[in-house]
Length: 314
Image (cartoon, rainbow, N blue to C red):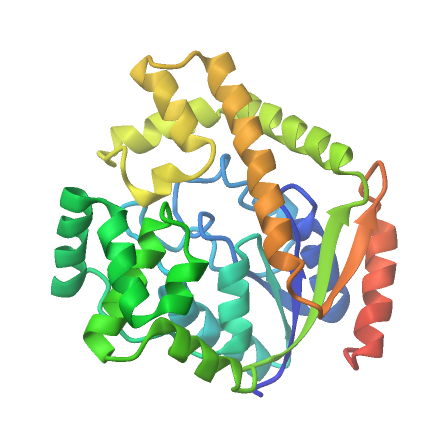
């Protein structure tokens, strides 16, 4: 393993950025964002990207590093983030990986690489054409013939992963299930100390998410979405599928009122937080800090310090 890092994880609005900054200041660390939408330039309000004031002088990496026209995968993120983490370690600093995209965080820590297959290549285009013409059913059935375990795992609506599994099989002759089993047996790239934040009462989390969305609207989320479109960004760009932008684009198109969009963003944000927690609860290594009614960062820093001390981080 290349070195020890800290991962601050949790659902949206739980305070990951704030705790990461506090830990970085205490331990002389640097923060590496693991958020699949904060990588895009111009998506500041809707992704709650850290501002200069919130960074408090702590170096932050992997924020606003991609054009909104680009489409990043977990593999692309790992390719860019790992040299940054290694550089922080080489400088004798503590890398603190903080963000809500669990797959990306796991991919950096595990370091197992990704199944081969050229996404966007000829095989993918052929599969996408078949998907458009036939629907996902026949593709899922084809996958069932070569990789029944993957087919059983995947929902028929999960078109992206169905295409990916078939693409890997067609291009490599190895199933994605076999690849995943092989990589799970490998040691991780980094020794990670995992610190998770969540509310003890789900209703408190929902209220905080709603307040955050209201604040985003007050800060100009609609204007930010309009600015992205004015740059010539197509409405179907990956960046504009982020929660908040997609709903407010409907306001600009005249198909939703601002109040309707606001309510939908709140709902989708709460649903996303639930999915994030489902993902994270599969990780037995996370040390959870539970918020009560309010987020007590002084207490969280104290508990985190105890966790890190026990793990040998000083």
